[in-house]
Length: 155
Image 1 (cartoon, rainbow, N blue to C red):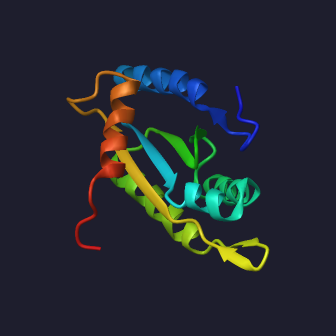
Image 2: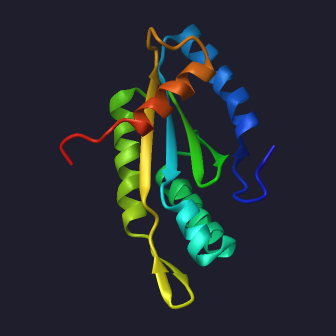
Image 3: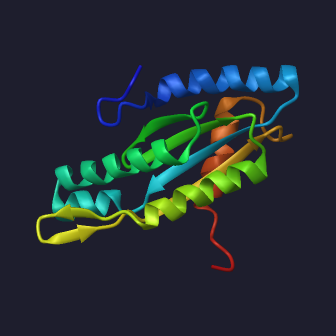
């Protein structure tokens, strides 16, 4: 199933795909990573400039993710200004490269909202399997959420 907002997978479909990728990862002993990409200012833009501006911001991020991920990667709409990206056969270093590409591209985005120019404020959480703390897709997503909420050090 696809989101009406982004035409990406809905999170329920992405969770099913993640379980398939984890099984493939176990069978072939290859890594799989996931990114949680959050538009940190999504709700503030929605409150200050309206839902149309917030959806324009989400649309710009959709294009960013489409251009900065591979054809085999699976982006999904996580809801409320968030995206989830499955990166098959990708370890931590490859996921970090993808994350940095997304951050760099997002920093160049500017959306017009009337007299205002809006820029998405992006945060990314990253998690990788295999990891002894990861049993299934839900715990991989939990690890990515923990990484997303962790304080940044050295920036």
